[in-house]
Amino acid sequence: MLRLKITPKTRLVFTAVTFACVILACGVSVEPTTFPAQPGQIETMLAGTLQASTPITSSTSQPTAIPPTAMPTNTFIPTAVPPTTQPPASPAPVGRQIAFSTGATQGGDQGTIQAGQTLSYYLKAAKGQPMITMVSSFNNDVTMSVVGQDGIVLLPASQKSAGWQGTLPSTQTYSIKLYGGPTAENFSFSVDIAARIQFAAGQTSNTISGSTVNGLIVSYVAYAFGGQTLQATLNTSPDDAGLTIWGFSDGQPYARAQNGVTSFSMQLPSTQDYIIDVVPQGGRVINYILTITIK
Image (cartoon, rainbow, N blue to C red):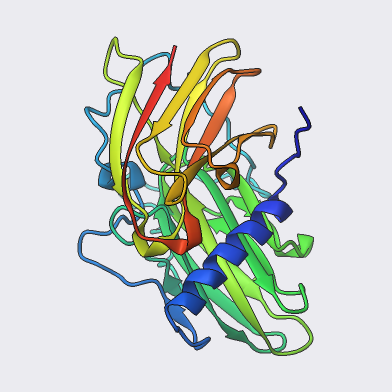
């Protein structure tokens, strides 16, 4: 069976098309706007808003340690200070907050960026969550940077990249900046933070109910060892939604929603995080029940 590798660029095109379709379906203009904020939205401890049962970590579903994806570019060695001196406070976040609607795992913005303009965004996310962020533009020359509030640089602006994906090294606020190209152009920007699936002690299965908020993909992540069997079942018609399942480290797709997959079972080839996307067909808003088993 031929396997195509999901690269950040492929993910960029797929997410941008999905995002654009939702915007066109709803008749939204390209004026800059953030996703709607709600009192109950995640800021963004996403797993807590998705109705998972008894989120207690077990050894079959979580890694013993998740290494940072990047290290600070500079190491600061403080000089001696009096015991009563308080450490300096972290700088307040700058820009627009990326708001996730309750039950969603994706947020973002769209609009117009001027030539050479910098647009700043921020969000709070938890240690160990996989994050995928990307920006698409007409000339493909809008780029980004990703930096933690503690100064750790996940994606430097000098790389002139349109996307980044990795496992977040700590729970904190992250700043994402977009940089305009030589001309003004429209852009579409998204951040996807998968909700981690956890299992009750002694259990190998979890059932989650959710909704494709705003017609967007809802992403989950489960850590599993090579040789274990992953089973996923979605209680919808393939005409309404399907499952896309891929390895977060190797980028390999193992199931595709466009093929009408609503039930999946496979012995896993390697130890890594596996992304399980609930993909609504045609940007539909549907309610669903997803059952995940790893054993």
